[in-house]
Image (cartoon, rainbow, N blue to C red; front, top):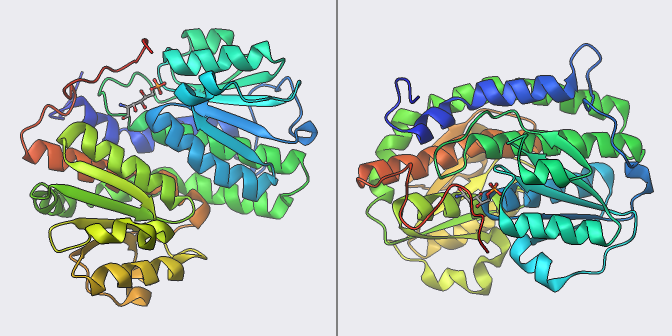
Length: 365
Ligand code: M6R
C-alpha cells in the first residue's frame, strides 16, 4: 500500500532511512564499531587477486560505486561490466576467484546468465539480492541480502541505497581481511555509516525546494549529469532515473570527460546537474563547473555548504546536502537524485510507477 504517498516511488524514497537502517543493523556490530557479516562467506577476501562484478541498470551503477570502495578500502582490483555484455563476452575468470552479482529482483535474465557462466568457470559467486526466494539467491554460492522490503515502483530507489549499504559493508570487511584497513579507520567508517539513515531523513526535507527545481528541469529537452569518483556512477544513475520516468533525454558523464566531447552540448537550455560532495577531488570538479559556466550553462549543484562556498560560482540552484564522510556520500546523495527525477516526472504528468515500455523485472534477454 502507498500509505500517505501519491506513488509507490515516493513511498519507497521516503522509506530509505528506515530500510537502510535495517540493512545496516544486519551488517554492523554497533557495540564494537565494526562490520560483522551475518554469515561466514565460503571464500576469503585475502585470497582474491581480482573481483568481477556484473549487474544491469541501477544495480550495475551500485556495482560501479562499489568498484571505487573495493579498490580504495581493500586494494582489490575490480572488473565490472553490464551482465548483457559479460555473459556473451565470456571473460577469462580465475578458478576459485569471485564473481559478485547485484540484483533487486534476483530474476534478471542477463544477470542470472552471468552468474551461471561464472559458476561454470569454477568461480565462487556472491549475490547481493533483495528478493530472498529468487532464482539468483538460490543459485549463488552465497547471498548477502538487502533488506529493502518489496519494491513496487519500476524505478529502483530503496533497493539501490540498500545495495550501496551492503556493498560498502562488504568492502570494509574485505579491507579488514586483506589488511588494508586499520581498525581505527573501520571504526570511523562504521560511525559514518551509522549516521546515514539520519542524514537521508535530513535529505528528504529538501523535497520542497527540489519540487520547485524540478519545474525548471521539466522544461529541458536534455539534461547532463556530471560527477567524479563515486559521484560519477551517481551521475549515471541520476540520468537513468530521470530518463526512465520523465522521458527527458539525460546523460551522465565523468566530469573530466566533459572537454572530450559533451561540452559541445552546453548552452543555456541544457541544465547541468553536478554531484559533488566536498571531497578530496572536489576542486577538480569545480574547474569543470567553471567550464560549464563560461559557456552559459546552467548548473544545479548537489553538494554541501563547504563546497558551495569554496566553488564560489553562480549556480541556477544549489541543493545543500549535510556534511558527511565522503565515503558514505553516494548512499545519502541517492535521495536528492531520486527526488529530482520523481518530481520532474510528476510535474510532467507521467506515470512514475509504471513508465512506458519498462517492466519491474526483466526476465527476457
Ligand atoms: O532486478 P534487478 O536489480 O536485476 O534489475 C536491474 C534493472 O533492470 C533495474 O535496475 C532497472 O534499471 C531499473 N528500472 C532502474 O530504475
